[in-house]
Length: 234
Image 1 (cartoon, rainbow, N blue to C red):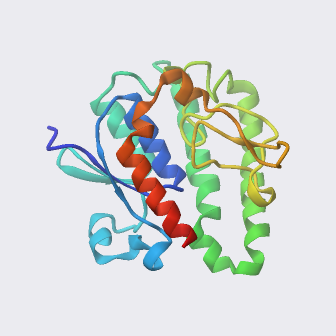
Image 2: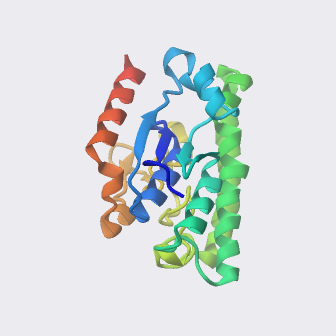
């Protein structure tokens, strides 16, 4: 049973948090955002208050239905099971397992290897080479898989038909790159960086444009994100 409005603990550069925000928006679930700045104050995720909420000290975390859930894919699975309309996973079990395979490839096989906590352990002089290797290796595997699964999105042509990847709703585009020569696992899951006149031209976001995901652009969200961005550059 719903107990108050869901609360999403999020960071504006976290692609894991974007996965959840997109799922919430697609399902038209109203929620509140609590920013957790992973940079400011040595990382607000390490505070005792947040550690009590999520012992892994990671975002996102979602308070919903009287429970708190960490891990973005687990959150999305819960939303799909408890609020099945509109559908985020295809009905065909073969397509459904492809969606989960691709999502796990990103969330388990690429992203953790180049996250901030790992890069700190690698050392500043080795960070770029380490991240390039981890991301490129994963994307090479992903591109091979997408040759047989992709339509307009990573699995098929419709959002409800299984376009749940990078991190969950990613249009499929080959040859993309991000800052510093890194392939881009974009914080905006439905957009990818591609080479442009300035070296980084952000592609339009078909998922947001076509599905009109107003929940991603609510004033309170944008105000929180703007404040965090200012903190990052202060």
